[in-house]
Length: 151
Ligand SMILES: Nc1ncnc2c1ncn2[C@@H]1O[C@H](COP(=O)(O)OP(=O)(O)O)[C@@H](O)[C@H]1O
Ligand SMILES: [Mg+2]
Image (cartoon, rainbow, N blue to C red):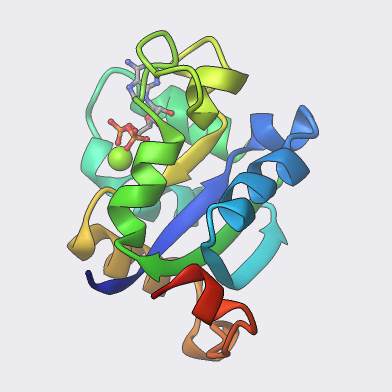
């Protein structure tokens, strides 16, 4: 299995609803590793770049408003098969369809307030990581318990 990095963001509703700790706990307890993290207010420019693929869709304007409505927590998460693993932990885009046990399935109700973002594939992960973080902000380090997490 491949060691991967993925981009994750706790959206403004996640911050406002004080879910940062609970969301981070899930990634930590799964054995994933945080290699970059920051708390920031998202500019309209950054939001538009991040959601470029959705430009023109009926929910686009509302989505930009939502993501710029308050601070977010942006991070890079590393682990074997991390891109797919994190997407599974996040759950379906529409919380009504997200399985219980997933973050969206456990914490939200509406597709327009779904608490978290995670990259959906290798290409997007690469693009999103470089959009949100400079190389110096991503930290290469070893976890002490790696040999108990991976065979
Ligand atoms: N029909 C919709 N109504 C409102 N917001 C939506 C809708 N579809 C998508 N969104 C918002 O746009 C984000 C990006 O959509 P998409 O890339 O399809 O989902 P995901 O975040 O699961 O990758 C969603 O997480 C959600 O916040
Ligand atoms: Mg997406």
